[in-house]
Image (cartoon, rainbow, N blue to C red; front, side, top):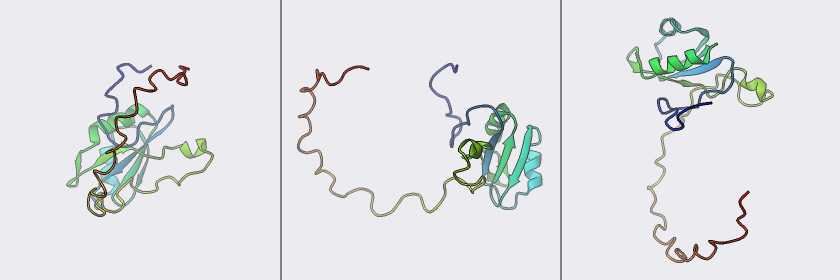
Length: 154
């Protein structure tokens, strides 16, 4: 069991760690387009990696051991490589996941997570009919059905 309930996962953003044994894939994002495979091989040299798939501006690295992958996230996420502060997090698609799902879903290595189009900002923020809702009817509910028998505890 896991001890200490809260606070898990605060040290990285992005998808949660995969459950179960087996290889783990990390997504390496925000790479300088000039960063080459050799640089990344050197970066991950001290970790036990099984596969490195380098794309333009991002990469995927497979680890045989989940603990090694977690160490790599802690040590390398935010590290400056070729002038860029890189992002290291769990990949959305893990090796073997497509097998578990019966082959459905996107092919592996389908590009960086997020980042399509500008963040928000379509039209003015809010301001449509605000202030008209909730004027009537608020505060009349509650207090009547506090002992409602329909709420059986199961």
